[in-house]
Length: 237
Image 1 (tube, rainbow, N blue to C red):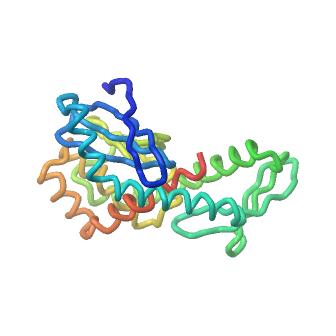
Image 2: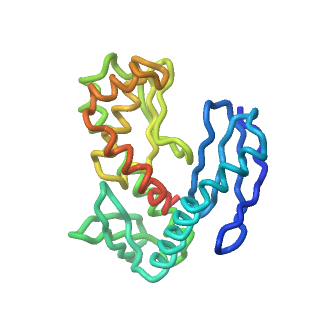
Image 3: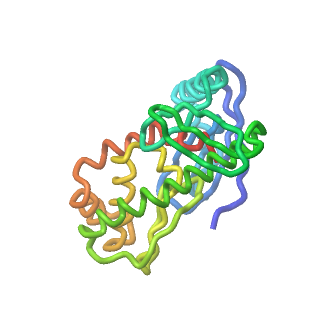
């Protein structure tokens, strides 16, 4: 169970930055930057002084990631609206209609429906479309990969988690984050292989990673893609 987060402060060249401190039972201290927010995840036994020292040592890395985030935010504000699907970028075109419809036309995603000129309605429509695509595409990829799994799946579903790309229960039910439908299919396949490996090993032991490698050789590249680009998958929803 997570403990209510506290906040630390890190002074960077551009000014002070608030750092969310989350205490969790883990072996090491981790730093995560998402949506321009810095989070420090640490075991309860690590002192505040030690955590401040870690932040100071990582300050250049944190500053560079925050600068990149702000640059991407600025670029997004001036670019035409778009949607990512299976690693491909589609320009978004909205059409007035009485019923919701969606169609891919070349490099354009046409969304039709009522009141899509309202940002909240458009945002909800984009999420609904991506989730519908996720159900279709994930089902097909799971059907393909399940033949190589150590044991059959008991079921699967979509997840809206903000900190996990996938999960697998002890009963063999897999959940995949719907936002992965925006990533290249190879990245989705890696996450599926990762969760299918949990059908055999409910941990992240050496044996578990050997099973991941058996299912998906070269998985490291896709894992690195998620580390570098995973934040962009939260653009919608």
